[in-house]
Image 1: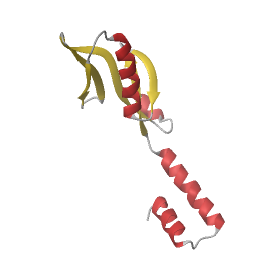
Image 2 (image 1 turned 180 degrees about the horizontal axis):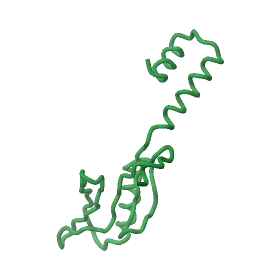
Image 3 (image 1 turned 90 degrees about the vertical axis):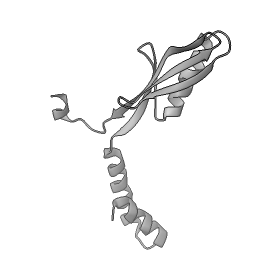
Image 4 (image 1 turned 180 degrees about the vertical axis):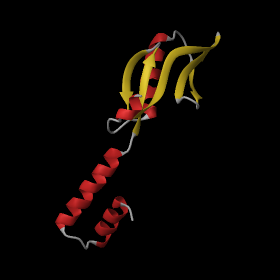
Length: 119
């Protein structure tokens, strides 16, 4: 049984001592923090605009900025390149479809330094 499952079971049953609960919470926190996570980088023409913990937040930032740049009505859409985790914002106007230069990139964030990863 994982630390998470043990903690949930103990909380559900209500049969643990406060010290044990603290130990389980500390172990669970360490387990969660040790896992790498994915953040999302919003950028325009290679200039980073921000980093976000959700894809949708990064896309919203790009969409708002693109609406300032685009003159007239435009339908915005995201095209995903699944190989490298890049989402590109395209706009469609009466003149046709074009890339906006706004991109969201999935970035894996390590939880700790790995000396061998640099080699």
